[in-house]
Length: 114
Image 1 (tube, rainbow, N blue to C red):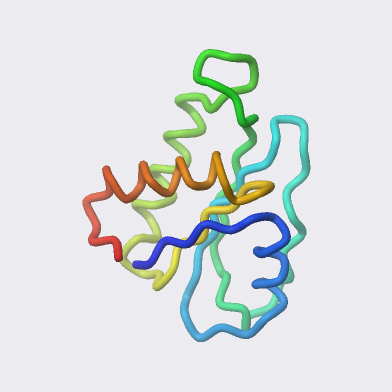
Image 2 (cartoon, rainbow, N blue to C red):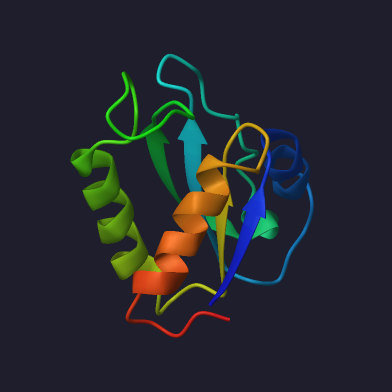
């Protein structure tokens, strides 16, 4: 499974394009924010999505990632890892939260990650 990090803008663009690979998305929004409205189209390859809300702040600060968020992500990755070609981790700018989550998945996942 390939892991790719994207911004809100890039995932929206991706969802409007045709792709052959089966993809799953972890979408990270600000604690009080909204998720991108991905196009519901079987040709874009996206058929699974995990949504979590947390701000881009240090652990322990208000609205940071919680154990519940982490459990939700781990459960989702374990569920889709062997059946998807690509996992897209997306946050607002595709820099901090999405990259951190992608790095953690690559480090701790029992599934081979490319």
